[in-house]
Length: 149
Image (cartoon, rainbow, N blue to C red; front, top):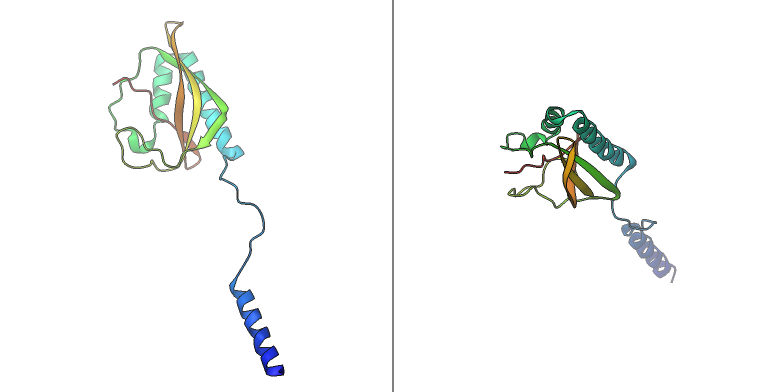
């Protein structure tokens, strides 16, 4: 009887050691405050450069173009753009790949709803609501220039 009890206890302890429980509740990944600040800064810099002029904004768009897509032949629209992101819509988009590409770009890909306004010679000529992807790579925000070609 004692042998049976000892054997049963050994089995219980062995089985208990093979299972583990992690307490808590599973939650989806969320955008961090640091990531949110990088994206906010990206759009603020883009709009500030646009306020300074076409060449300044084009230079910024070239500098912030994702490093893996800088060789792309991109014809930018005439004038400047103002981009107003709706930051409450900012979310991770790990499955996204740029149009015509098969692979996800390096970095953390986020997407946000935006209102994009084209300005030519100080006059707003059109607005569009859509989404824009921003990639965070090595502590910097990169985008994909709004090519017209």
